[in-house]
Length: 120
View (cartoon, rainbow, N blue to C red):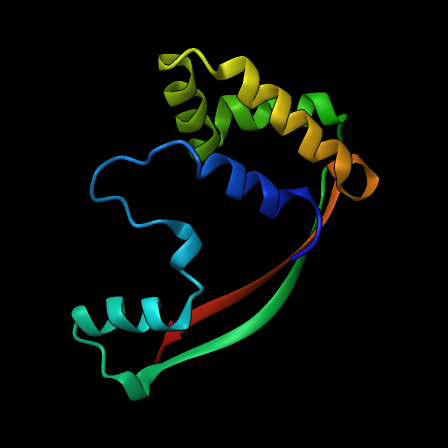
């Protein structure tokens, strides 16, 4: 994975998730996805994966993008809510800004590699 979006996900994962939460970070991990599909009754031979790369282009300033994620993106909102409870929201904001600035084009264009699980 390239760019700061995957780093953002890793950064936000340092804030404890709610109990019982299944991390989206495991959705593309074949063993984990197969386990969850099997638990739902899907036979292993019906589960397949396709690799793909998505290019996200954000037509806004880096600061506006960070604020939009903080205001509207559930995982980012949750991370800031948790960080505020332990007086670390400023630290999280600074780390997020540094990660975004370290990415290509200041984090406004991101290539994200992913695996898309499906069952037929």
